[in-house]
Length: 306
Figure (cartoon, rainbow, N blue to C red):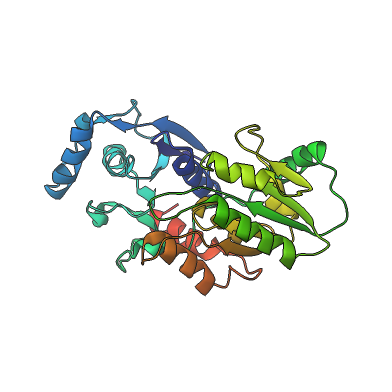
């Protein structure tokens, strides 16, 4: 069986979604890095696309021989034009994850578009409620084993808290963090409490997290171990700051935890709010219902002829 070609813009969050998509389609893959030659080249790609001009000269792409791959996959704006252009050159279908705003949609064999981007209802667009996450049993088993080597997991129900950080649509202050963590502790008496911060967590917020009586804590500025797979696999409840769309996606797709969003979002109908509201509408927040990507992956496979 031929493999899929994944185009990467170098962003782990994008590349991981492409890899998860390929695995869920049931294919192996190779990863090739791509980039526009300059910011001007990226701007020019939108005009070129509108004029139906597919030019690899705007891009830095590796040499790929025809006949090696069944399809091209890309996630993120740095890959959209490259994916459709290279796919045409190779004579294979093209699939992208996230909404390729500004490009002609008809050139994509399949678009896995987040519902919060409000994509049009077209035959080649599949709306997804969250990021694509590979529910890989081996990955979680390995994560649990590594976690158990660091922490003695007892028989109590575990409450896991994932703290992200501020962005253009979310705030995070020490005062808010302390208030939310006090609420989490008071709502879950008798449980084991686990926490992790992230690379985006401000130092003053990390200090607040550090001050609570956790049974296990990971302060990212001091330790880069990733406890998330174990949290997802073992926790009875997970609390995730609403800015952390990737972590909310994983918690709402895998494991059996009851998932709650810690709402640090700014007012307004921005995409982070639409994302959280969409998960709530699916029944994935405030409950244990998990996202089933199976039917959407089956539809994508059919669109791509795989």
